[in-house]
Image (cartoon, rainbow, N blue to C red; front, side, top):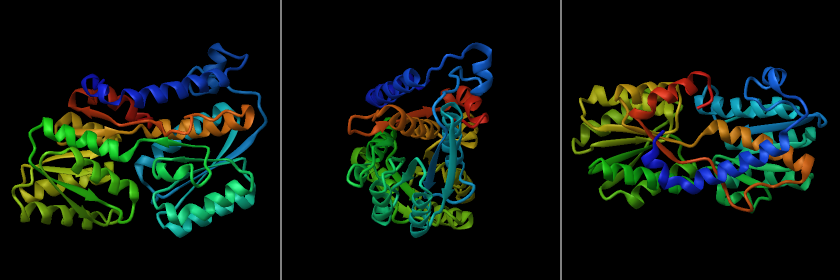
Length: 336
């Protein structure tokens, strides 16, 4: 799948594969066969006999974001295998996200997984967890702050590198002018994605900031931009849900611009298949959730730390129309 583009991301998948091998080796139990498959949802891993533990995840997302549903699916699968009670909380407000982390610190959970979309707002809460002896793993955003704040490791993609991959793809497609749609102001990961696009794209790139919590605002903002500048031939969105709005705005504006997006869900897979989207950047959110729970379980039960001080990369991979049929099978079950 996406073989020609996977070569750009060899170290991404090597790192992820190494982590998965470590997980598989540590997670084996004496049970197997049909019973194991029934216990682990058919993945063939089986459960563990280690003591029950609580692991909490706190993300910077709004309710109903399909990306985070996929992250949770991965976390829940690993939790079922690892005899972990998985707790989840989220808020798009940075002060509320920090408060939720503190709540889990006070609860004395066994481990915390957290995103650092707005790192400065999360610094005190993460350090409070570490000071309380609770191991922390960061995922998805804020990789460069993870070690500084005391986290064991960071799991996700390097956002600037992912943006650079998009810029290269636009070059291959002969594009000349792109608009990069930022749907959450102040989110460092989104800013890094657009900066990466600008770094490698030989054409021009302009950022467009919209309110991602308001679909009408997203639609009107993108439509107005396309109507005002007919030379825009590419729209790059940074979120799978925003991608759908971009396709709609393109139609309303009568634009011929191609639409591409970061992140993947069922709607994106279908849009790739139909040609409404030209390509997507998959950072494998299921893997981020799965590995984060496994990392904390490994640390608590065997003292393991994955990544060797480097980000455990889960992306980027460029996926296109030719990949859509296989991707649809995975998106339908909520794992891609």
